[in-house]
Length: 86
Image (tube, rainbow, N blue to C red):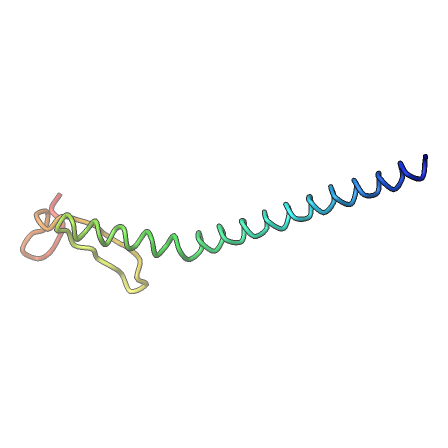
C-alpha cells in the first residue's frame, strides 16, 4: 500500500513539476517577445504613428540626423524663415 502511495506521489510530483517548467518556459517566451517589441517594434510604431499624424494634420515632421523625431508643428505656426512662431 505504501509503495503505491509513493509511486502516485512521484507521478503527481513529476506532472506538477513538468507543468511548472512549461509555464516558466512560456513566460520566458512572452517576456522575450515583449522585450523585442519594446526594443525595436515600438520605435517603428511610434515613428509611423507620428508620421501619419503629421500627414493627417498637414504638419511638418522634422527629423534630426539620428532619425529622432524632433518637432511636430503645424505649418501655420511657421514664419517665412521656417521658424516656429508660437
